[in-house]
Image (cartoon, rainbow, N blue to C red; front, side):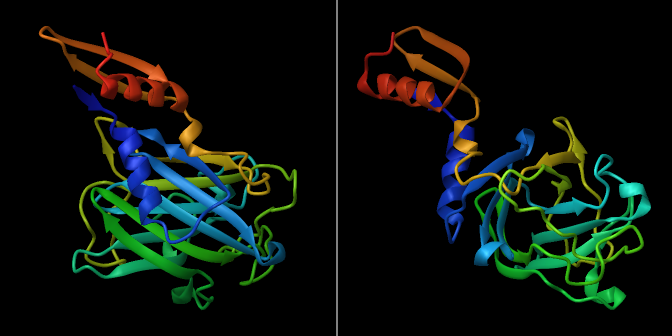
Length: 250
């Protein structure tokens, strides 16, 4: 019996690599299994966050200024966290900003502060995993239309509106330095960037990555090679795996 369930295996690999538990999780780009984990801590003043994706390169997440157009934020930029493990093995998680369609720029290089507290950036098999803390309030200046390089405030109020974010992944190779990094990549699976919304104030357990539908293949050798493909939820996958391992698969 051969069972192919790569998505489930990657999920377990990510969970094992995390140093702490998180209240919620969303998949931002299924083609590279890019996951965002988050929890609200310190009475609402701190976000505990983790990013994970299948990539040898880098990944980033930005909180947009604009409420409807996250990709350019009307030229006002997005508050970005950029994470990678450089080719020399050095972990790197940095507080940055990106003005409109442009590479991220470290906040410290513009006279602002680095308000991201790295927990880890590591490569676990084919996955890049990064964990960090960041404030929910803006600490670099007034979070309004006149400010470019600021930490965007995150709405963590219970029942608060979903917030515009941007995400990006480069799957080419491990970068050698932050300066001059290659932009997000495009391949047969598509271009690995885009806007979405995240309800940061959602109640714990509202969003769970292990409850999404998984596409997998099961090949059962019963003398005649056969292969079936299904899209199922976690419970159905577990049942299929249990049946296959028991030898009762038909």
